Image 1 (cartoon, rainbow, N blue to C red):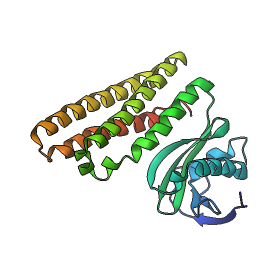
Image 2 (cartoon, rainbow, N blue to C red):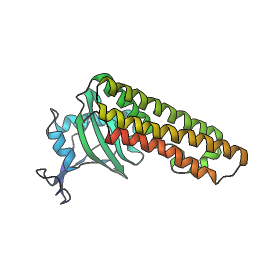
Image 3 (cartoon, rainbow, N blue to C red):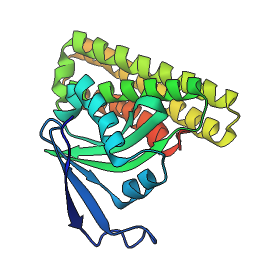
Length: 231
């Protein structure tokens, strides 16, 4: 990977983070032509890890090269597992990727692996076509493909919840279980509504179906970002 060019963005938008520098370093490098920007929280969290900025950028580059889609579409607060147990939460808008936080999991490998699998399935679900155009659900094949991926996501969430039981993290387990139930209920509603659509051919129902499917994606996102074990 080419060496990064470092410039400094000074933005007075982190007053709430006392003790954290207000300067945000910006890397401009050959990472698919993207700007990589650290929030103050991410910069501070990286300073607490046994990992240099260049080593972290190398790990990030590996993921972007292995999965080019990370550089091609926009996303918000995406949990991205990296090698060696590290992970980052990032947001991409146009050609800028903002690193919200960086950390290393201190949990057992099996639990982290289930979290990582859920994160990767979430990213696939995040970019499902129905989320930008619900009319695509007119095609039954597209609806079934969507449902299959979301079923895999729910199963991955269940596996993660089981592993939190093994890790004896009661609070995370309860929160995850409630969100997984919400996702499962939305999945059943979506299937019921689609059956109604196939019988009536009423295209106005497609919007309601898309909402239920999106509730599944949202519930899993909340597990990944707000109730995750890797902290």
